[in-house]
Image 1 (cartoon, rainbow, N blue to C red):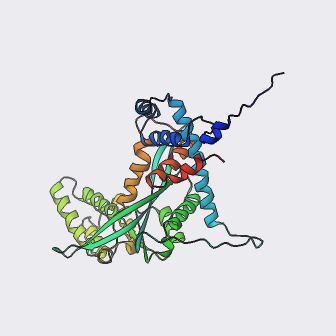
Image 2: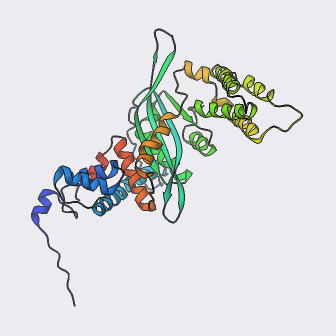
Image 3: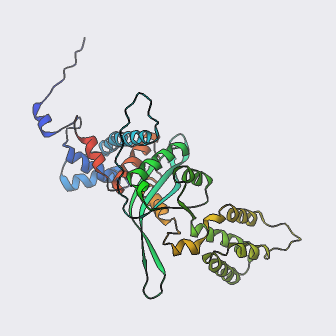
Length: 347
């Protein structure tokens, strides 16, 4: 019979060494390079070059998965607590609502695909929350809008669970106290359903570039052989949209196609797209109010949080490995690495 002997070194506890036999500060740096650099092998090599500490690719991967899971669990518990109804037996503790980074805050959502082993391409849902700044250009008199102080939540979640995380992140950023909440997104119905559920009184705005993309679809079918005419038509419609003249854009679209022939499906779909989002396309008023009209922040988030690290050539992820990486990249790029430091602190 083989007995197992557990060896305990008091100095390990003094130095804060965990199961990995590295200090929390060392593990933190290993995690950072593993999360930042788009290859576990290159991350391990870079760490060895800088520190002369032996480190393998598998060790980096194991640490990222272990502590990413811990951070992900913390975020999951936070999201669940934010939407859980307390029982009658529980003592209700009122949480402190933080101050928002600016009087106007923007929240945008999107999805990006990653390759999951044994599952194929799956959608990562991501939210980006930002402070909105606005100033009037002295020369043109136009309002210039900027988005700063971004934070992110990303995961392989279905829409209901994503809604919980979106709400938790918005509470963390103080949107409950913001004077004005804006949500700029593409036309995906699942996104607007969540926006309505979480931020019923916010200003909903259809992303300008998605609207213009539909104009190019129409022009491409109407002026297939004349790029110059297509460009001129789109330019004229953009000017109308900028002044909230959507009805005129729809009329102009209809005159492009003979009534005696069927309208192409793509044109019908574009018209329906405008119809469903018409209340989100009052761009003149939005700009005058200092609101952003583009969802570039969340589209950049798709690249920054997900694609730069997880969609390199030939990459495939286990579901647990992907979730761990998404949790760590979300907190790193949201300037909240302290969550990792907490996970590294021995109990």
